[in-house]
Structure formats: structure tokens, C-alpha cells
Image (cartoon, rainbow, N blue to C red; front, side, top):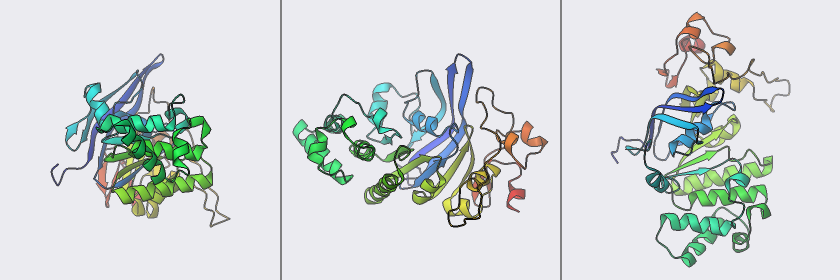
Length: 325
């Protein structure tokens, strides 16, 4: 890999789904760069395209979906790779922690079997060695009584233990990039904090590159140095976390932050963004946020804004300079 080459470069990525009602444009011409060792957060409302972008990286879209554009991992194009070659990328180069481990884990296989199969799919080791490594991985993700858990099925574990097992499976092959898609959504607040701390510790200890997907700005802010804000399948702002929280630019980013309750200020009232995310069967012309935007002018409805550099960030807004003034 060249020294100036990022780990992941996404260019012009679009994801479409054929449905009985027409074509759903879930991701629309997204550009994204992730450097090795970086922790990047993808944030936005449900339906903003975050998960579909992540699934497109390794060809895991639903059967009616298709991706166009470019996804390069250390310069190697992943879109269009044969399934056999993609299987070698999944787990070994890019691993995913899904938001619901109960549906992501195979219910008819023990945790040990699933870990052992993952390890042996990417390394030439015998079953006994793989089982020892599987137990070690459960211990690394702080699963108590790991030897017993290896023999248990997913339904026998609590939600927090299932998510830890999913993290162990994702990391067992030593991936370069970990994609964590809403990894704490199904957990209570206490377990959520434990899982986030675990991910942070593992990322730091192993030098992993992390892409964390969430609709929760608090979760993103706790782990990520850079934040990419998505709306209706498009990237609207890409900034260093401190910059984004201290001085958000895009009206949608401002709306997301204004909608977060401030527990330190009892008199503060969260302000929801008016309206709804658009129907992606027929998204709005121009800027997709313009029907909900307090700064929208005629140009916003007619011309799609380019993602451009504005005061140390990338933002897709015709009125970005005015918004920051």
C-alpha cells in the first residue's frame, strides 16, 4: 500500500433496490475516505442510508439491491468481485458487528461452532487449536466462563453477552476495518456503556480502523474522531467531531444536535426537526433536505449541492458560508 493511500476509498457509491412500487434510491453518489487507524462515525436518522452503505462495502445487499460506483480497499476494487473473492474479504479484511446479534448469529449453532468456523475460514489451523483461540477471544471481549459459553446457543445468552460474542466473531480473523452497525441499539443503558467501552478498548489495543454507524450522536461522539452526517442517502457534512459539535454547519446537522436533550440544562427543550425523511422512491429534487430546511431558497430545490470544503470541513449546502457567519 502506498503511504498516501487510504485504507478505504468510496467514490460515487449508489445503492438501488427494485421493489414492486419502483426503484428505491437508498444511497446516492456517496464519496467517503477512511484512513488506517481512524475512527469514523456515520450518523443520521433511520432511512438515511448508513446501513446500506456499509452492506454495499462487502456485497451483502439484499437480492433486489445493486451497487454502482467504486469501493476500494487499499486500492483494490471490491464492487464486482466474484463471490468467492468477496468471502475472503469479509471477516479477514472487513468485519461487521450487526445491531441485532439474535438475528445475526445462527440460532442452530453454538457460539463455539460459529467462532471456530470463522477462525478456520481465514487461517490454516486444526479444530482443537481454533477452539482454544475461540475461548481466548471470548475472554478478550470479557465474556465470563468462556469455556461454558462456547457450548451454549445464542438464545441461552443475555443480549449483552450475545453482542460480545458477535464482537469476538467479528475480530477473530484479525480484520483491518471493523464496521459496527448500531451495536448497542438493542441493549439497556448500562450494558450499552459496557459494550462501547469494550469496542473502544479493542480498537485502541489492536490499532483497528473503526466505522461506527448510529443515529445516536452521543454514541458517535464518545468514540469517533471524525463524523460523517448522512441524510436521505447523501452525505451532507463531514467534519472532525469537535468541529461538528462546537460549530455545526449544515442545517440538518444543526437540527440533529438541537433534537438531543441536554440533561445538564433542565430548562433546555429539545427541538425536533419538522417534517419527515423523504420517500426514496421519489426523492426531492435538488438538495434532499430542502423541504425541511429553514434556510432553503429556490436554488436548493433546483440544484443538488456539491460536497465541498468550507472552513475545514466538507459540507453539501448552497448556503454553508451564510450558515457559519
